[in-house]
Length: 596
View 1 (tube, rainbow, N blue to C red):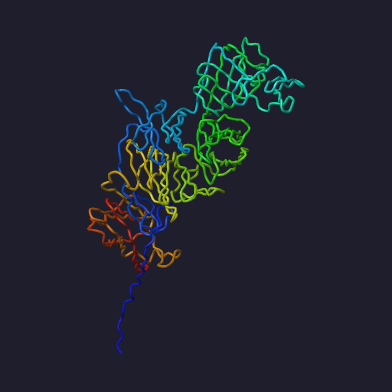
View 2 (cartoon, one colour):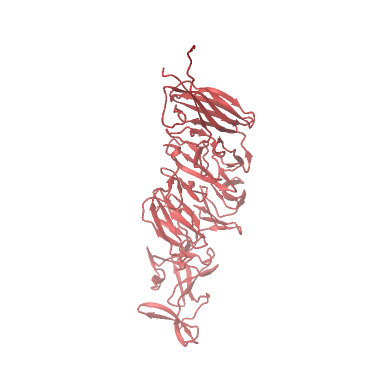
């Protein structure tokens, strides 16, 4: 029997990637992930594809703010008759408001109201009225008349006669009260709440019934002992003040609570000033029909009067009052958001949650944890019942308990000044790196995967009408998913793999670098009509990319691109293209060679 020599068959292995795991800009990037990319998306998961084309809607002049309500709302410059003014626009229609300064705006909404900060201007979309949160009326050396009145605002008679409806002043243990005689009861009865009218030309013109006002008087040269009990605060230099709630008003008077020492008093004060003033606030949110705000220095939180965005200083002792509290922790406030029925204020290292009481006894609790990074308050976004934002050490998700970092895949780069919005399970966040380069990232909340788009860094960005609308640095209004406007013609893109080594087929641990080599790599993809892709390989951590293959799209049918890298320890691939594309799978064919 003859025997013949024979050759050992070459062992071949195949590894196929058919589910792509998005961006991972770290050294431990797996072969299912991409180390870097541009203008790619997880919208076709488990495949990776180019992002949706955007819609270019309209040019603006010098936009200063953007907000979503029933319609899209923005603030922009308008030049008419060689005069430039700043106006509020609702769905592109200019509205009349008090004068707006030429500065960046923060826009908020409460019911029918739009609130514009820092101008403290409000606009009512229901009746097309507008005004300011602050109002005042001041007089210098002007005759001011104060008259004791009843609850109906009618003048009363203080003569001490036991006649039905007549009044007298009663002082017991240094405390003065007002009493009224009742003929039915045949006795004097205490008046629980006393009122007096303050009259002067235009006194009540700028105020409304129910307003909380601070009244300041200059008592220099005025002899009136009772005035110290009415205006209880000594502000120095002869000034005294107190806070009052206006129970009624006319153009030339206001009625407030208080007790005079006789039916009528008239004084010519060097200064008499009534003012309704909202505090200077850094951030605001709306929750349970109130506005909630925080101070610039990080030590005060406030609530407006129930249902009234204009009143922040109304303390009548009832449940609808305004509210304020002092916060003892260090640091400035970095953001505010209404979440799960709570107004929440952020610092960089803490979250302050306010519990709302139906009786007006609101309280707060502060928790030390990851807060919002200073300058990234516009990253706060509610998406699928979770709150997302940029913290100091990454992007966080908050469910009402403790926040968690979700941005490890973005690598070690430190990003700042984030702006974000969310729609269709996607959280779009644009940030700056240490070199001031801007990048738009997208977190897919359904797959928990990151993707990276381009250098888009909007001035303003909001979710509206099932899309994200933004104003870019060139002052154009766009939408992310082209639900409006003119569609982009094309988009350039690339994907770059991490280091691809030679592990044994089916194993993630055992490596055979000396005996196994990659004989072939097939990339299966859809390259749509008019699109193009070029394929590159880089070997052994070299900065040099070697061109391998180029392909133009013929339609939606998929095709395979063969790549045959030469022997090396490891390599990376990059696909650079333009137009619509979708990567379906990557298959590697290994051959095991000799030890020599």
